[in-house]
Image 1 (cartoon, one colour):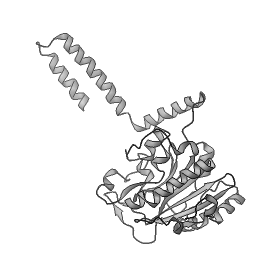
Image 2 (cartoon, helix red, strand yellow):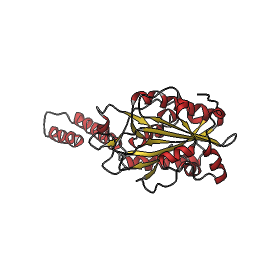
Image 3 (cartoon, one colour):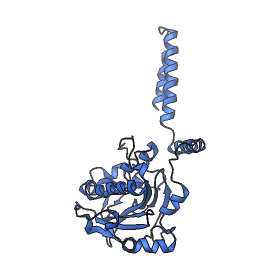
Image 4 (cartoon, helix red, strand yellow):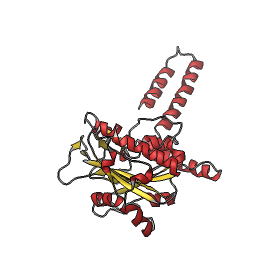
Length: 302
């Protein structure tokens, strides 16, 4: 509408005899440039994503680093299909997410964190946005405004400094749950930093995290009734130097620094959440890594 009004003003100005013709032509050129910039900036998100995919394919052909999760990683990270819980599985630049249209939150978010991706030149964007691939009603910025809950990342922005697209996608509300702010900046942040240390130490780790719901009625926020989780889970897997894994559950409150109180085996987290993690692993490896949680094997003592 603004561009239309600019051209309307220009047309009116053309009728004024006192205008210098060279000045009018200069105004016309500026308006054309403004229209071009407007069209680019308001290009639909779907078209921008399509263009990004083409650019990534071209980058791959000439040997530039690939910024999307390989199929093998997606397969390993993706949990087994949920049968009693609504889910829409979406893939983003650096993570896979199972979205729940009833809770307006993810069921789980999974990603590979490599040593190379533990840092980068990009700064935190803070551009939270709706995810248009989620059906309405869905979480919006308005839901969180004045709610008293922070917009808690599942796949953290700190794991996505290596790619502008990855950083942008990390701020999609499909990757977010209502989270206590002290929990977000406390125990949850500490766990994220530990995961980066493990990625540097072992070369890569595979992470799945998300909300935990207790039985009964749940608190909701905003006009779209986004559910507030009672707790959060995180499971971590490494394949080198030998396969190992563990789980982590913490209440969605101010939290505590005594993180050892929350450690569990992946099997225990599966029983609590009803989610089957890492089903693509060979059965013998899956059974072994999910049955126990030897924290000392990861260099942590609590």
